[in-house]
Image 1 (cartoon, rainbow, N blue to C red):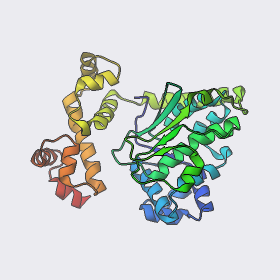
Image 2 (image 1 turned 60 degrees about the vertical axis):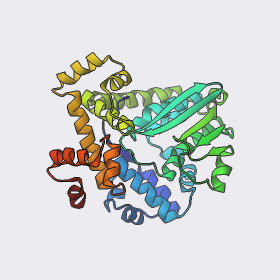
Image 3 (image 1 turned 135 degrees about the vertical axis):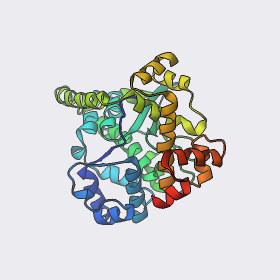
Length: 333
């Protein structure tokens, strides 16, 4: 589970300064996203994934620029990056930088980057762990541009991906084609950036082992604090939520992903005073609340996404959880 314990996205002050340069004042963005009006004045604001996505949808709507995520990332000065991502720029080479970015990004967002090397390619896939909602296009562009800017600024070379894979259904803008300068596939099952594996060996001109030693010590300690707070039941519920839409998550599958046997998982869950069946119900209840509050899914669709065979079964289960029907709960929330 890599230590993801809570749905928290850190929003640095650099975001608001960059948005201002693109004529996107904080008050207007917050109104559009229906977020607290004072969020931008907090020195270290945290958002849920849903709020983070709402903010990027507000950026898309008010900018009316399909490439706004790319432009904002390119305009952001490396010096204002948070330590969790800044350390990547002082890495030994591009591979080391990407591994640091993937590892320490956990301190900023519950967004998982996985690097897979095979047949001369390095595929970097993106997955958000606390939502079933589609990621805003601008947010996808931000992480892709961050990965490329890391390589381009770190090596001083115009690194080009082999291809870009995007879940968005529509074709991309000319700005996207110019920036990535490679084939871009849309309508894919997952957002991914595919690089030449050989480019990952390119050295970084700004490699600073002394500064890395200082940053690594602090960041590793912070990761340790997060991982220490991670309870097994919460890890299990996260895995259940990720699997639930494709069918009833079996305990054996969850155990394998956690690297233990089914019997060991059952025993360790029991040590926390819980059961797998109970965690499955809790995961369904929490995910059901989230999908109902979102308002964009029909109740029969939510029943399907939660793994119920029919809407009636979902209604009975939900009434047992909340004391009211899904429709009543939605109107109240």
